[in-house]
Length: 335
Image (tube, rainbow, N blue to C red):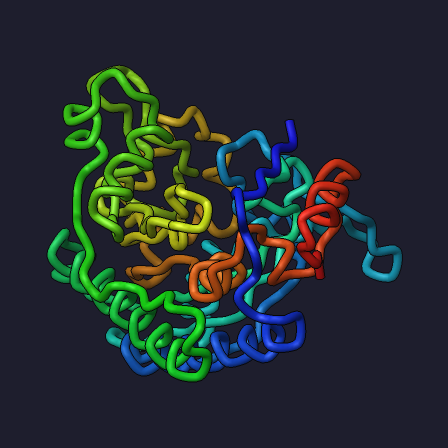
């Protein structure tokens, strides 16, 4: 069900044209900071992939990819859900060495997404991936990388606030770490989304670790595909959004599966049939590099830094009639 809420008394802090200029500033500034902090080089990435390669991300396993035929190639293609697996294959093909990585603009269509203030069928994010060594597959290295990303976001928001002082949306440089199991014990009578909201409102910036494995209540904190993140070394980065009084997920990231954890997680998820796909076969055979990577939402980062109430204020998409009416009546321009 689609659900758009207009906060009482909300007024955009920037005009339409200021917003467009600010979006450009955010994207240029943040990706420059990210590439320097994590030693990444920008690469071109596909909008669609061959499903037979196993490179598409199946997210929670229930979302339907957008598919189409290519008569000239005699094959079907799928619009990507994300580039989580493609990036690792690219690092292998480009022979990138440990300590270095890549980033790219990822654009996707998620046809089954519910539409609300934070969700659109159009997804835009920075997808990044970095080659690591086996001794870097640790919780400490994961946390250090999260801190680097949070610092990049804070630095970029400082520049944006300097250009547009009326925003007053400077984002913190400190992040709180908590595991999904610790969060469950802290709020045992709450749903996963309620737990995310409570901890993020309290701490402002939170990285919730361990997404995918079942918790002590018999349920995972959230769904996660079994074939890219190591469920014990991953997590989601949340910021408190005062405009909407909500927890906003800005990034999902993690140290990626090696052959052993892929084998284990495919069994747990009942996905053994994927073992014959090109990507999975190469990973199980130890051919692909060990990596860490993730995605960082471009539109959501723009929403946070610009104090926007609806994702349609910072990206162009398609919206249901009720959302269009509510935004029109509130004086909100959907791009």
